[in-house]
Image (tube, rainbow, N blue to C red; front, side, top):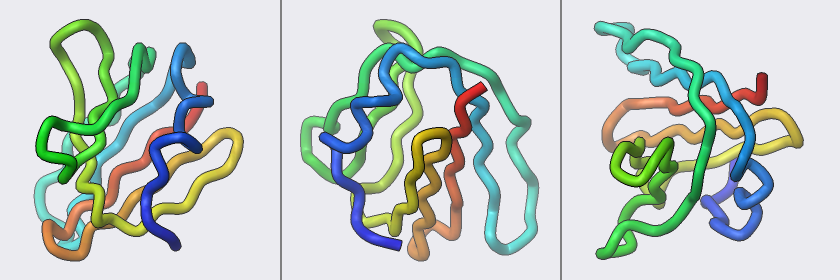
Amino acid sequence: MEPINLEELQGFVGTAVEISVHDQQGGDQAPVINKKIEKIEYCPDHTHIRFYFDHFNFIAVPLASDMAQSETLFCASNTESGLTYTFRRV
């Protein structure tokens, strides 16, 4: 895995994705949701990348996460939070 590069993620803008967030410790899991990515940008303090679903709602992925990406998948693992974020095109 490698650090997150915002420019490489712009191909996900305007596409529908299935989003899952998993706890590496095996704790409670958030449900998988389907959303359309409207825009992707840095948060104001440049510690996270925000994936916006509309003008207000977003999910923030820590910039320090390790990332793997293909044409249909984005996966980021953050060892500090213990969370793995997966975005899969649908």
